[in-house]
Length: 191
Image 1: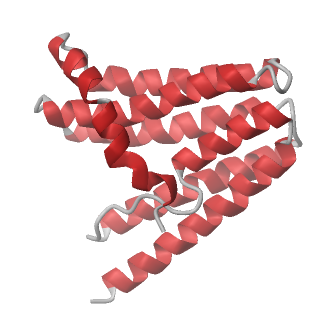
Image 2 (image 1 turned 30 degrees about the vertical axis):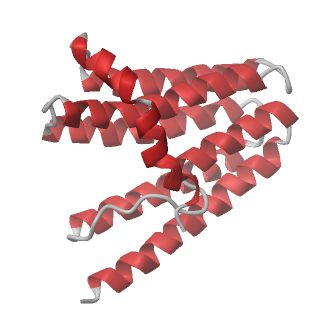
């Protein structure tokens, strides 16, 4: 069950021309990682400051940029031979930071315990995948509520004002995604 992650190869192919332009200009992959976090902050600000449905367009644009930067940073590093262990670390930290920053946009809109629960749950799939990779398994991605689905749920909340249901779906869906990944890893690491 890969969810929207199954579209990643298609999406990466659409970004090929942008990657080429960035490579020709010598843009650092680390700069793109930082731009992803800044884009998530823009989405959070729009979500927090604009009423639904006016928040929908800026939130969608900022999160589309966040996802594009998340795709471009690693791809640009691979395309230009600039992959480094520090870059991989920065990429992982940037992805987690972007998720958490994005969800801070809900702080003025929902009970803090719910925002914190959704934020914690949103980190679980990645921590599970990283733990599996540390144990020697391939890095797992996708699931019912991965990074792309979380972004989509934030856009839905910005468009509809249905903040509590979106946060509940992020929390429960992220926990289920982590559980699915744990199950897959458990089977893979049994051999």
